[in-house]
Amino acid sequence: MSDIVVSETTESALSLALSHPSWNETVDSVKMVVIRQLRGLGSGAELRSTPFFNHTFAPDITMTWPSSREERKVYLRFPDDVDYISANIAQDLPSGSLVFGLGDLGQRSEAPSLAAASSEHDTLVLDPRGSDALQVKADMHHSGLPVVTAAIARGGRGFFHERKASSVTRKLIAGWRAAAQALPGPTEEAAQVTRADFMPSESAPLEQLLQTFWVAGGGSAADYPGDFHARVRIGADELRLILSTAEIDDWAFWRHLGDGITLSEIVGAGEPRLPSNLDRLVRANVDRLEAKVAWIKAEERLTEPGQAEHEWQLVAGLLSLRAPAFSAYFAPKKERFRGLISANRRKGISAVELLDRADGLGIKEITQSDGRRRLVFSTDDITRDTATAQIAESIGPDARVVRAQATVAGGTHVTVDFEESTVTAVTSSTPSLREIAQVSAQALVPADHRALETFLHLPEEVMPEAASFGLDWD
Image (cartoon, rainbow, N blue to C red):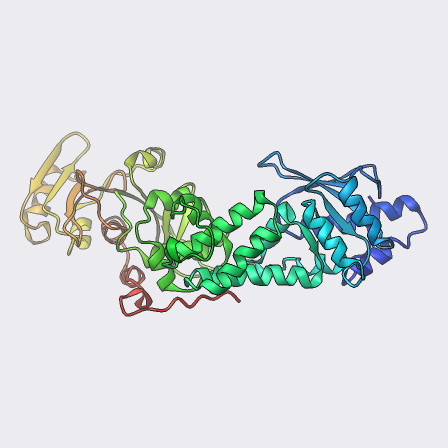
């Protein structure tokens, strides 16, 4: 296909494309404009041009999704005869098609008939102005609009002219916000939109998302303004939707959402499209999320201007705490770290280094080794017993502390392994994420951790006196 000049609006771009003296160039240019617009909906579809143009029943473009067998056939139509387009939808085109008008259709007197025919036959109709209203710009990715436009591309039905496109997106995003506060009015309106303007294949997950926000916001099934899905609960799949839908800058919401959520479910949700949501979820629940094992890698991390020094991320299927001097990883089982441990083994630390770090860790037992012999030493408090360093000297210059038994703030006993760079809860005990993160950093990384301690405190907004769910959806 030949290159075209992309104008400010799709209408002007199509007008320019249709003015080519060569018919082949005209067809290629028109399809390029339409493909650009469909790609801008952000559904992840693969778009392919066919050899046809404005054919009665052969598609001009196909949309397919790699993760499924879905296909949506796209038909380009000139705007001259709107009644013909309605009849064509009703009589010739397969259900689930997408019709793209090559000129304005929303101002035509026949628009209501076109809307009725397309809705009845599960066909999505877009015209240039409607398409422009759905384009996702770079600064809109936190707003929830990409979720709406992708759903429209996959399963929208009816005539999405400019006013309709704006109305649907506004009502859905407002409904999510209202559902997160358990407000029935806008929630009900959003539920009606999902059923009226989307095919069942897409309306079901959209309403599931709406109900997920309702539950996360503290709403009950009995109070939901519609038919509540009996299976709605906050698990990995629901977390994936919430974390990637729209940026929510409200600590109380994340605190409520985290009630009963496990580390495994957070990891199972996968890396979110909006990492800031994951960071807020973990920070708001760092005192009740539990981790059995932590592995730390000491490394300097440069932060970009405006980037937080500490943040929670998902990296390679593990929850990670990124800090200026280290990266910590957390898991329910030690097996998740086998490969990392074997590739990053260390020789342990000296007794002097241990004493520098051990204050407040409640270490009562250590294992020292010179590579040939191992000596286990127990006492009431390693940091106050002068024999700690003396025993190391007696073993010889190669003596290293390879293991220690410590106690986290909540009273749980943990094993600190200086060769593996791990901290593991003993027996069935499971410390909170905050507790194991504090102990791991202090025991395994020689650095000033006062900023980390501040970061691991619960934000003031999630304390019991915080009562409102004010979400930032701008």
